[in-house]
Amino acid sequence: MGIRGGLAHWEAEEFGVELIDLTVGDLLDLRANEIPDKEAIVYNYPESGLELRLNYRQYNDVVNRLAKGLMALGVEKGDHIAVWATNVPEWIFLEMALAKIGAVLVTVNTNYKADEIEYVLRQGDIRMLFMIDGFRNNSYLESIYSILPEIRDIHDPLDQDIRNGKLPELRKVVLISSDPKPGMLSYSQVLDLSEKVTDEELKARQATVSPYDVAQMQYTSGTTGFPKGVMITHHSLVNQSHVATTRGNLRDDERNVSSMPLFHVAGCLGAVIYSVYLGCTLIPLVSFDPLKQLELFEKEKGSFTFAVPTMMIAMLNHPRFSEFDLSHLRSIFTGATPVPVAVMEQIKTMIGADCSIVFGMTETTGAVTQSFHNDSFELKAETVGLPQPHTSIKIINPATGDAVKIGESGELLSKAFSNMRGYYNMPERTAETIDEDGWLHSGDLAVMHENGYIKIVGRVKDMIIRGGENIYPAEIEAFLMRHPKIADAQVIGLPDEFMGEEVCALIRLKPGHDVTADELIEFCKAGISRHKVPKFIRLVDAFPLTASGKVKKFELREIIIREMNLDDAGNIKTA
Image (cartoon, rainbow, N blue to C red):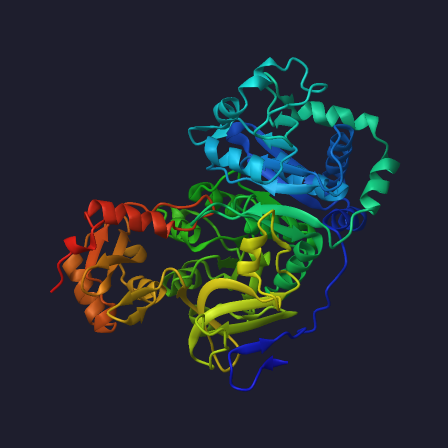
């Protein structure tokens, strides 16, 4: 096992970790029986009236009541039930209740507008939609009423189903609110239905659920193209929690302060299921707010968090950062996008927490590689760790499909217990991503070192080809982040008539700092190869982000091309 004969091909190792056969619902039952009085979930929002503290027995009781209500409402095993909401308590209860009754949780991006939610409802064959009123000036109610105007005429949504030709599977919309709206059920009505189903009936349904059944369908964040419904099994969710928390040295006394959106794998898995697996306490934020998260670290003695680099940057650079006691924060999982070395250094010096770098994607149910908690700072700063237990990794030449040599870059492929079942109702896209030998093609460019550690150097689609030279934006971004005045940097390729593409760096400065484009170009010239030095530097206030904190590079590129009038590459003149 391990590396095969000088090639970038890692054969799966167990690392002393055995996979387990449990469903997500059974996992919660197990914890409720083992540690019934231990604090499980805390919402600490006195300013808005959201104050909730549940132990594991209470948590399981709420979930069981909801599960019975869903059964009474007619939810069958395998039905697709979508949740369109921020990180409210009901989201978590729905995730666990649907798992118990064998229905499939379908996660919906909180930024979606009418056309996007209609796409998910149609493409995902959604049977029921649970939703809040809206989020950040985005009215979900207006979107649904524009898609389904006829539901205003439904006088008894409990007995009358939605019938819409465009969305033939949709039957009910449930509003997670105490204020009822025309044609929609309320969440409390669903809970009240629980009296119609016995505990024995719930247990009988739960017994039919297999660890290898699909538990969730998570729609990709859509940084490119139409979102795809990634089908994930109970087995993948439970065992990702098992292997990631083991390698990350997490304990059952953690206090997990999480602001990752629950529609994202790092939220519904890294917050909710990690916490149940560990039997620890989850302290969610309703949505990301760097100041609120810092407050909760102090008030709730937060010991662990999962945060993408953009979130960490926002907290570390917050003007009130130094006011808070973060002495209990001992472990941070970060990844999803490359982690700048400068951010790693800030975490080390400003917090003193242990960092675990993870790399993966929705299609792999989270991490396929991860650093060990006791890896050196240099290893964590330069790599995304070793392959996870029971995970094979291969790096190939995309043109030939052959494994490259150790130290050479190519596309990263993985074969693991955590690979998705496929994209829902997209067999061609599934076949493009998972080949006939079971290898999942990530689209990420990577290098494998002699010790098996992996370095991510960019995306296949993000790679800039300038005059025949391959340039990886992540490398330039990492260098720019060393500049003391830079808070964040993104590098894109712009069309050029002569060179094919030229390098453009978009820079967000730290508050109160000034620097010119010429100064930054000189900084680059002193530290990186000539062909990697950005030809263009733009100072910006913010980057377009997905709701999960990833920069929308394709959108960023389109904005800059329009602003610089580069739709015709011939408009660019090079020296």
